[in-house]
Image (cartoon, rainbow, N blue to C red; front, side):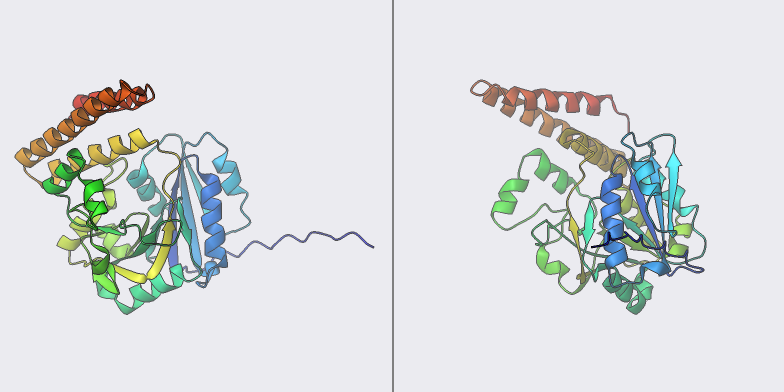
Length: 325
């Protein structure tokens, strides 16, 4: 019996005029992006009509080599010598785009269904006046995770986190005031902001906005972008025909995630709200940290492992107090 010869797939030709630009920002997650690109290549939307741009934020795990080895000529890897953050990384990728096809910003921690991109582009083509489009993000079991879109950030939302009310609201079928209820996102729904993990933006609109505000290193940059876009006439839309699995970042620790999340939220308050509102939000976050420190200190009297959580929250509090907004 003769030995079989493995035939490698031919690289896809670079599209002369792409119908869709796709942007990733990578930090030590090249393998995850490769998996999403495999989803794109296997999906119903013609992958050969897309251009994929990946900015690598100074990864140290070999991500650049892994991504550069992909057998697709329509994938461009753009190395950065430092970690620019999400918004600045996206802006760098967009500066390399040729043509004016819509831009799809995808997180490395998403997985796509076969029809995800085709349905998203169909939505954009049917509702071009919306200028910003997104889908429903789901947990690993395929159920909507409640993080597909966001309302304008509010002091009430910050207070809910501060007082640990989010789990209680969820237990009774509610959600944080800054999130939309599941019933609102049925069909095609207007929202204040589409989640940045799967965010399709009209190219000309993105250019008029001059991209993401790079003062937001991580989190809130898409909420800021959508707010500025609404001023220019955009009406962000989420379609439940567009489903993506959102697994959650593996490269940001839970305490760092909280730090970046609330650091960016305070920057957002500072930019778009009054100084008094920003101060009130900061006091609420400080109080929420103190509450968690006290709770874990009490729990650590019975189980020493809770002391690790106490020290993590103490570290987070000190970082917050050092920040200036």
